[in-house]
Amino acid sequence: MDLLFTILSFVLLISIIVGIHELGHFLTARYFKIHVLKFKIGFGKELFSFQDKQNCFYSFGILPLGGYVQMLGENNISQDDDNHAVQNKKSYLDALPGERAAVTVAGPLANFVLAIFIYFYLALVGTTQLSAYVGDITPLSLVQETGIEPRDKITEIDNQKIESFNDINLILSQRIGDTGFIEIKYIQKGLEKEALIPIDNWLSENDQTSPYIALGLQPFLPPLVGQLQKDGPAFQYGIQEGDLIQSINGKDISTWQNLSLLLSQLPNELIEIELLRNKEVKTLMLETSSYQDEKGSLKGRIGILASNNLSQWPVEYTIEKKENLINAFFVGIADTYRYTLLIVSSIGKMISGSISADNLGGPIQISVLAGSAAKAGYVTFLSMIALLSINLGLLNLLPIPILDGGQLLMITIEKLKGSPVSEMTIEYSMRVGIVLVVGLMVFAFANDIARFI
Image 1 (cartoon, helix red, strand yellow):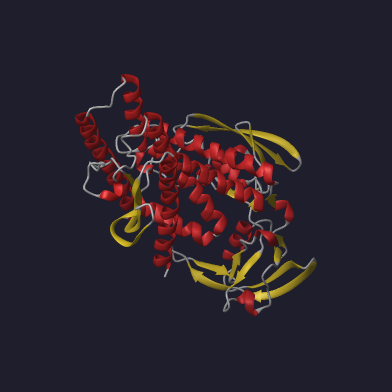
Image 2 (image 1 turned 120 degrees about the vertical axis):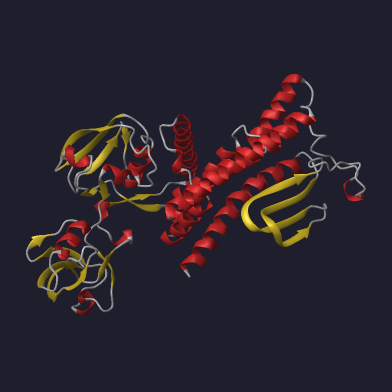
């Protein structure tokens, strides 16, 4: 069932970002009266197709890994063809260089517009996010040496303001492959403090770990009961969803990580739990159960899971982000710009070698991420669509023949020299482009397989 859900999530995600991309080409071609022969999403055998009144075929292929818009004049189809339906129609070759450039750039531009719309929508309807409190510090990590402690609040990283934990990960992502120092400002027990963390080619190797985890930071998770296992001690002894656990055997509990660690040290023991329920303190006695970890050690547990419902959390540990119509529009543009810069920077570091090309992901990696994002909720799934839409837009702007960027390069050359590029040059450049793109796809696919071996 999980596999089917992952596949469907992947198909939906790819269909949206590819469909929007091709729709940009399609609508712009129609605007300039260029006759469109076919609009297709996916490759291979057609699952369904239909034709409109302007003799354009629309279809969906069985393999949703791309798509294309075929215009009159492309692929050796011309007005001299025997098909009377396309006679006296404007072909792509008849269009002015500026019109062809507009049609070409419209695809990537549509991807950026999709990202802007998604970020605009999320800002308008509002989202609840984790605030920038630290939940736990990984032992022997870079952060442990700085003095940052659980429940400290991070306010700035590299002179960039932090509002939510998402900001922490985004800003740290900009430092992947760098050497130098990460500057962190934080509040500890009401006092503003600063830490400098030395890094050397940080995360430059093949490492899929989130930057904040690699640094040693964990987000703050309150010891709030989210779900109960029906056969667990917590359910049997009357603990309820939404209870905030405050102490165990008289020891104060401040974070979910702290709670998990303490319970693991108490297998098959009678314990006293103090919790807060509806602003009322309650005390319960229960006996823990146990399990064996991978090392064979006996660990304690009571059958509870952390709460991922941020509306149940104490308000100081969450942040509400909601904008009016005008501000949401600017947030959409700003977020798209931020992620575009991050991706461009990452591509540059990959080309220069400061980031390993093994980090490049292919369809398997995307499908896994799509499934995980869909399970996490529509906000996470929409955010991933926006991010991958930006990726697709940028990828297509690379000056590689068969990609939109390569087409723009040819149109620019034509404009500069005052005459069309020779058919031989176009043919050989297309061959080179195919080799480059196929090679890139094979490399990304090989990376995907290596991750699962």
